[in-house]
Amino acid sequence: MHLVGIFSENTISDPLQEALISVNSGVMGLGSVSAQKIMIISFTRKRGIRVLKELALSGHTLQLTIEVRYLGLILNRGLTRKAQLKKC
Image (cartoon, rainbow, N blue to C red; front, side):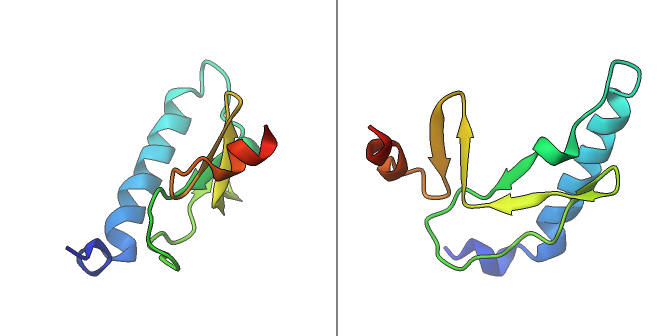
């Protein structure tokens, strides 16, 4: 099954954008969400797939990346451990 053909750019990006807006408005009284610290990663083994259009939060375009560090772990789009093992 080829999921990229099923999902268009808007099918995935629009609900994500709505979720970002609702999270941002939900924390308004409690604090703020730092758009500069948010990174977007698409977990897939396919190469060259760009399914997401640009997402924004509070006027800042969010960065789409292929690798992110979270709680000391290096997560990449294919969920391989190559970057983590290189570090050791």
